[in-house]
Length: 308
Length: 316
Image 1 (cartoon, helix red, strand yellow):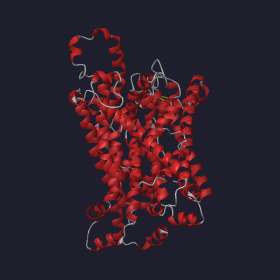
Image 2 (cartoon, each protein chain N blue to C red; image 1 turned 45 degrees about the horizontal axis):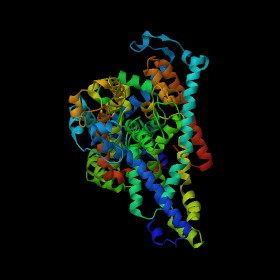
Image 3 (cartoon, each protein chain N blue to C red; image 1 turned 120 degrees about the horizontal axis):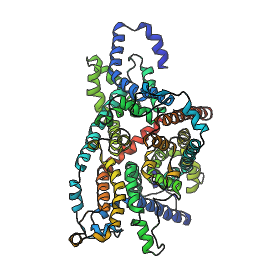
Image 4 (cartoon, one colour; image 1 turned 45 degrees about the vertical axis):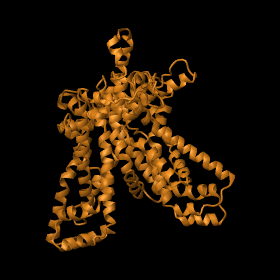
């Protein structure tokens, strides 16, 4: 690509117009992609009586950070944050270790029935029993309303295992043979040689698994009714829907607002301020890690593309 | 090749090698059990489709009804209408998805034409961000931007374009289009990455050769870049055809409300709604799920066969 740009031919008027439009288009689409996040953030740090009416549109006004302090006092929110963090950490670790291990094991020609078991795993990517039978399975395994329903079904992910296996096949087998001659067992080889070697691919898997766990919503919806196990995503969803009814309640009783409340309207919590602040808390970890890990995301999909 | 050498050497395997083989197998066995439990064992749950299952009861306590639920689907007029409605929504969403699948291709081709590496990187980073947030958060953003006091209603009212706030979300108008647009907002930048990867894999000498032959920039885009990524496009297109019945339910679940239900209820969401909603028709939901699974697997086989016939390569 770089070579091509350096050797660029002379620009014709058509080229200039094309370039301007091209830059403008991508600028506009980028704006559309990031403005909603910006809009959310400026609303959470603006005066709450202004944000409630939608008066904060382009820049923050009456800046304060009380929303973030108040929100932590909300019933159960700290607990939900803990659930989200726990499932992300535990789930990601489990997925990464299992993907690395299985990817390595399926490169071992000596394994009894290797081809059969590999297919046994791969084929599960292409069928699905459907949500009710899976729900019944979780129930029969006594996983519903437990923390483990977030972790155990997500451990084995065939696609990740393909990625690791493909990656390891590009590593010379002589490495393993040399270690075997030195008397290393298969587990030693995995932990001492394979795991450090596959850091790039495992990092990619880790970041996808972590985002998946953090964003997961459907498993809670289907398998969990215990409020103590609600992750942030689910709580946010309930807040949005409650905010709906809260808003109409407030509208119906608008004549009742007392002077005491009017005094600090700017920092009194409203359905809008709660909803938006929780949203920012939910998206914040993604925004935080995203710039650093973006290259892993790209790498991940490229490795996937090679496999097709 | 590997299979051949394996087969010929089987007899020569020493006892030690065999034991080593079993040991390796035992190490992966726990994971194979997990695969069995979460992918194969649920298939046994298809049996619920043949019973009149009522939630708290055990399966043995429920009545065996054979193919009643399957025939209900096709004979009961209201049932047929609901299912048909869900199918129309499903095909509409998948169809719009397939129609707009050329957008990431265009996005990648035009982004490659941007010369500033920094700007390109900036655009790529920012436009892939929405792919990594959940649908719940997308809904939260949509809610913030499109409610009565949201960004767009305020903007339009301030500009004097409208008198009353427009109900964007609590309405049955343009549901398909809006769902499709949210899908594009979330997925366009990410979808383009695959094609950007394909473009960077195109042999640079092709560009040099075409340039020597006097091709201008647009001709390069049309005759070198585009053909270079078409194979990738076709694979993805075939896969999306195989997945035509599976829209997933998360997006539609979070956006659904009393107003838009008729146009948002895709098949996956419909199955969820009849199973977990007020009617609790687990058995009927399972029956629909079974038919969906069978059609999907068949479609995948057909598409795979087509791919093999035309490209000489399978996709799965």
